[in-house]
Length: 220
Image (spheres, rainbow, N blue to C red):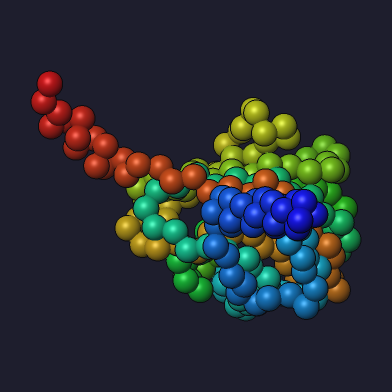
């Protein structure tokens, strides 16, 4: 009888942990699901699909929209961040965050491996894509990327310790539209690599316009 009671208590504990974890982790789905991936203990690992990317038209003259993207759909204003690491191998191997309205409007930011160097990279696409980079002095085992969506702007930050964040880009993104927000990695030139994402979180932020209206019309 005692063994049965202990078994039931253990089962209830595991169920509680599972429910608590599912409530904390955003409900997410795949766009261009990779062949190999796993999500364990809060860490997402996947092997990127070869010859895939997100880019539209400018400079190169082609459009691609086929890299793995693991996302949750959010409305309003929010803060999202993640710790990324990867075994980059080939030119343009990349991993990071992506905020996406549709195939013509998205922002991706993270690390991109170019000519043997690590770059903090941001691509902003509104019909056509642009690209900005900050070249790092040396390879890093990991980096934190954070994005804050406020009104019609997205601020992108990077950090090496999840304490001090430095802005790397401020970009326009239409407000009052649902956004797919999540984790992407691509290997445009190569045969793929392993990308890792840890401590992914999305935090709702109160609507700024509403907060300003409430403050203006506050009555003591």
